[in-house]
Image (cartoon, rainbow, N blue to C red):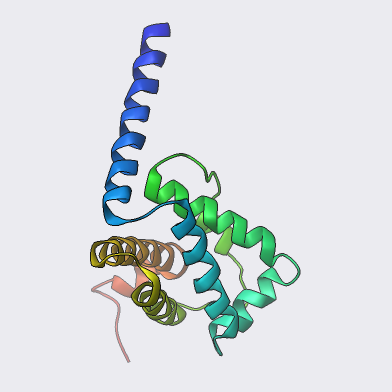
Length: 155
């Protein structure tokens, strides 16, 4: 059992080291993650459609959310386990949230990366990751398998 734990710890350390090296090669560090989150969510707050939805949920809690998002993106980029939340559950029941907001979220994220990403490779990596996250959340929150039923009659 002890050897298994040590082997697992060594494996996880190797994953983190590889991720850190990949991010460093693209110019990504903790300071960039902080800048990305601060810039992006500043733009979210000013956005005419996204801002009210986020503010409805986060009013008075924006600083906590910003720190949580920094831990989230750090965990995703560096595979360091900094984030331990449950994104799907966190987004359930958010008033005003709809599937059609995710493309706007992605467009704003892309604009932010275009302005501040340290390299084209970093922009590509973060956009691909954000697109996977948006797709996963959209499916988890809004997918209705009945709509895919080939026997369902359309009007």
